[in-house]
Image 1: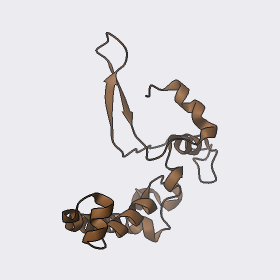
Image 2: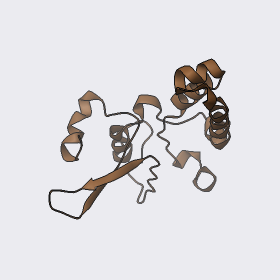
Image 3: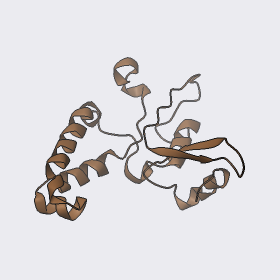
Image 4: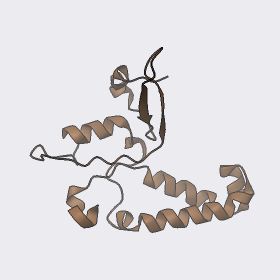
Length: 141
């Protein structure tokens, strides 16, 4: 997206540094792979994963990384960025936004006796305690 819109128009919220740190440690040797990933035989896969993340995120890393990383990769940060409440946010003059969420999630029935489902996704961290009321409006358990 940066190639199309420019870095000044793209805001990245990601768990990049923590992921890289874990992959670097886990892919050092068989002992590290065993300790961190549960099996020493995973070492080649971990090394390949580190290489792929470094390659696919090379431009982002060269540009200084994610704007919000680690524990800031949570739903409250997403909402605050969209509302213009963070230092790096969507300016109020903007008339349209592309929100691209890449994560994992699933669906569950929306209620008893209904065939409709609610879809959800996960972010790496929960909201800070000060924003816990955000969970009052979503199904979670």
